Length: 107
Image (cartoon, rainbow, N blue to C red):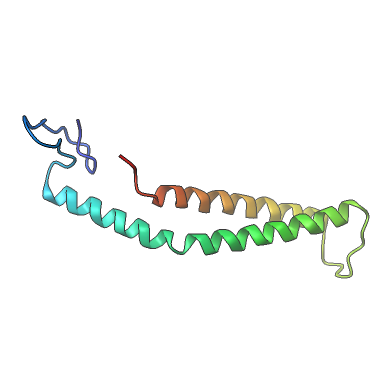
């Protein structure tokens, strides 16, 4: 078994619960990392919702453009819109990954 923070090998105690950390310093570092991840995860749902809303808007405009709709705003280009949608999709993937990483491990 290894320390969950630094990866050093741990010796199994003869009685009681198995150790998770090799030292109190590693235990404290792990606590601070979890607390920091929880705090940063609080802002992620709002960011995810904003990106998802923009993706929904882009998808609607792309559907209209695909049906031959001519936008009033001549600045809307299908190529630019698809590129922006691809970038938003990547951003959504990154935010989702951060949200997954911020969740505390079970076990």
